Length: 260
Image (tube, rainbow, N blue to C red; front, side):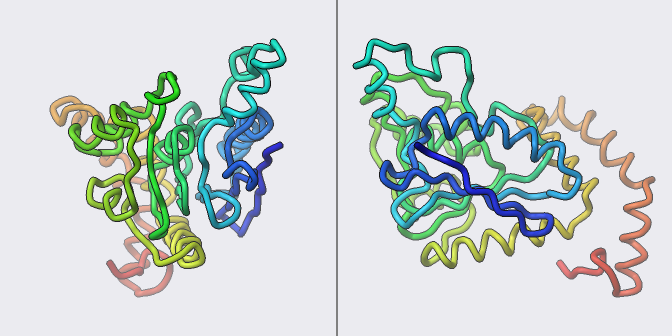
């Protein structure tokens, strides 16, 4: 039975998907815990960034636990995820918080869907990505989320129509991930460093970007998005956070004094 390991480090939380024997496949128990976690993250006044990763050295997540589904079918049962209980993929929830996928090893199918539900994705050199749903006869939102992540159409269709795997370097080339690290230890250290940097930035400015991403505004044509976004950025210029951080920059003290 899968589980989540949740570790809070100040304003950053590390969430580890753990089902090592099944390459961190997401069974009904893990999906139930994910469904509980996202509202918790949304409502937390302390937590600003969540890092999502997989247990062990072999996998981020191999996807939905099809062995559990097969066992349910063999027992004459309707799979749990088809009984209206819902799934815990992050793209199905809005939290207003930054989500970072730290990907080591296998990242397949529902695991890839999970990573694509995060705003940032980074990986180790051992990461392997794939969407073998065409080989399993399953539908998937991965094609849409690959495009939303900025993966070019040709590369996205190649992945989803063939079911073939790509390595970390190819994932970086097509924009699926933004950073590659030597190994898992370096990956988690890098993800934590990124999370702490984001947590130090203006909560209002970060939240505005995340809310726009969650609402799909960033994907709108510029002619539509600019009118909405300009109102958001104009409002930020007049708030206390902007004034305070501007003074910090001028004085060289405080989080607003960070150099670019």
